[in-house]
Image (cartoon, rainbow, N blue to C red; front, side, top):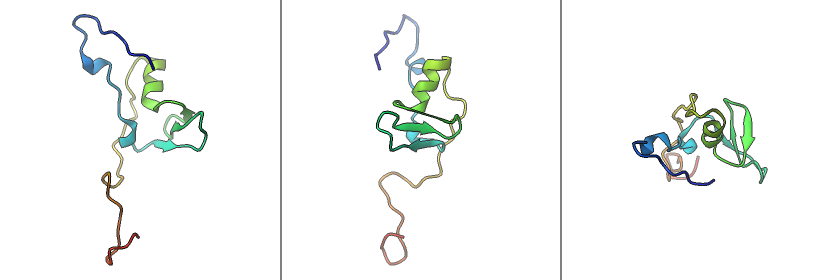
Length: 84
């Protein structure tokens, strides 16, 4: 993706994208040409779905929902300390 030069008075907030790794609807595919997918929109593509949505519609993703996934870097373990 190419970077865009901001005009005077345009905030950085308008050019940042949603982090799809935190979204409930993101899934990773096995297709090397279409690595990322969105369950809510129902498509796969080579870029994060939020980037595809922004480049297509000009607005940020309206369906972003924080994922209930475990905290990054932690794996769920059983009471004996082994992976569940």
